[in-house]
Image (tube, rainbow, N blue to C red):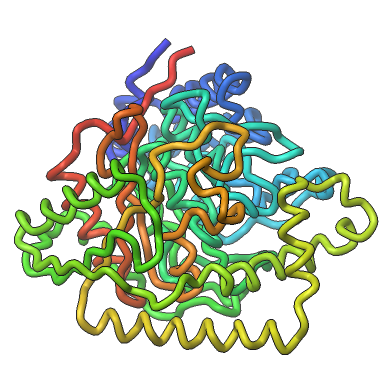
Length: 468
């Protein structure tokens, strides 16, 4: 049972709604029906909100019929990850320890998407507190990849990616503390953007406040830019918020990349990518040369792998949030998550602050690196896919539950904007992502490069309509 809505872009959906060619109510009903029908197989949603969504869709439809001013995503269904607050709705962060928690406020990203006319249909699944880059938690079970149900969609924005790739909604809100937007974007063939740290307000305070980002996942770069333009901008509730104007990412999505200076790093200096991943990344680098860019091969972006810096920061924050459960009800937690929280909680102050200052040095290193380049490209992930229910690929079992992703977490430590866009399909039929990292505060350059690559290379890899 397929529908034209399964592959319709948000931009086209907004145009047709405004032209009264399609109904926000019909679009929302279809999204809810497909979410319900695929729940037993994909398991993308933690909570669906049919009554609230249909009520909002009716209001949106009335506005269209009355000729009222319409928002930039008017009448378009979207979802939000369970690490993002929605007033009056369960807010468990993928954890049995928080199963009874209900949000008392809307997060700014939810407020803004709703104010722009978006129709929130529900909350999507996440690994526990976003601690794993795969799609399972003791609370919600295993979320699966619509490209292959035996595979994970990645995480921790697992349900967001699975639902968009399956054609349930054209875009979704996810979070990214170490790659949790870019990782599932890579595994499901989507475009996903983590903006500059603080560009999209994060509030209520995250368990990982120095690393957390909120951002969009979509089936095209332009749709990603559209949702980002709605949710980005300063908010006083986020103490790390970036003041000043938001870059014109929608305009950038139509711009040429001719003349851009690009660094291409297959490994960043330490990663171990599979040959097929490397082959597709090499092809992407050549394509940028054909588009008129200067592309330099840079083997060593980093002198050492910053995984330990990221681990000390991320898991210490989550560990403090879950400390009482670690000490008294550890059985409620994902065992793999509890195992990495324990050493993070045991850090001495001197050791912790040693990593804090090393992080500032890393940030300055990357700042200097970008004095010579507009963007950096690399693989998003070292593997083409991972079986559902597994935490670490078989070839990388010497790494921990996050350090195996290699490419994404450095840019949470530095705060630079970064995206993933589909680079093609591997021999196992699964999508492979290309990571695009920009200079500080230059999301427009990231979107400019991602959109140009997608326009040139696009072969229908960014959607896998899921039949039911």
